[in-house]
Image 1 (cartoon, one colour):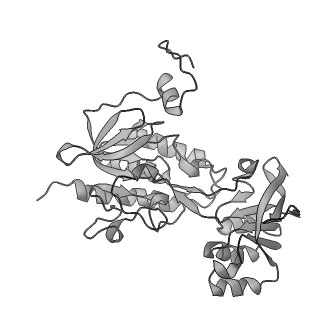
Image 2 (cartoon, one colour):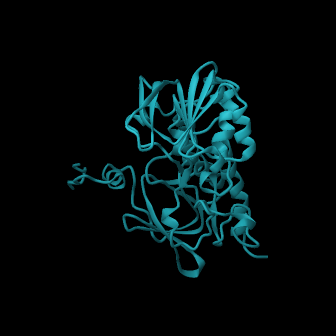
Image 3 (cartoon, helix red, strand yellow):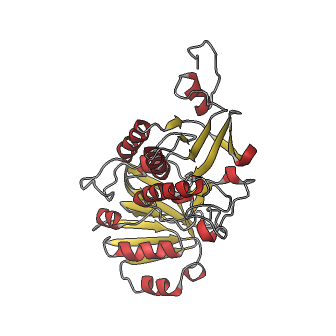
Length: 349
């Protein structure tokens, strides 16, 4: 990459590329922001919009782009106010523009490396490029990464034929079709029961016997559904289809070389999610047993709603323990956290 200033970058990172072309500028290390929002998905952008609209100075960072997982959705049809649906990028693009209208300073792409203590109770974010940000409060909105199968071509079907949740929208999509679902936990069992009321046939693929990972009542309910077939001790090995439309999947039993093939139109993956909290490893913030951030009384006594175990640091959206993994819920967290920020930042009486 040859930059306008004459510098030559070889295999630059996205952050370095953004600075090379002028997308991201240097951050004033002496400026003290009221709020630094880490993550520009629906939760982070909502916090940015509502915070800035109420007079807070806000800096929003993201290591890749605005929109988060919602921005990658081909179409969102269950978000309030859009009866005919809207693409994820269109929805998040409007939120991004709205945040800028209210004066939010954006640093995208810029990666936060760690959270530190500054002087006089100020919080400090250290960036991967060596820069530092000073803020009176931090909002963590880094989301979660839904676990994905290590299969060739998986991304070609995401958003159209491969799903990570089962809402009424997905129920309508599967009506009359053969589908498959991977996972053996309660969420997988609940999804299979729900989807069985819409799909012609549901194939539930698990690594272990259901009794080892799923509640008894769900095992019994699945056993009583004529259009649900449970296949245990297997793993998915291949996907078939064109133009984003899935035609069939293949699987094989562990320790076997033989494969089974089945024609399905939709594949649901309920194999867990991993929170984006690696950069908080040494930040002294309480996490639950799955690595999601605890907030409020669940984090420590006398904490504000959505505040973590560390004073002045808040967590919203998918990264928060116990959160509902939906775009609307994430945006709701972003709106709600501003009230807690005002309470934290208000001068003592």
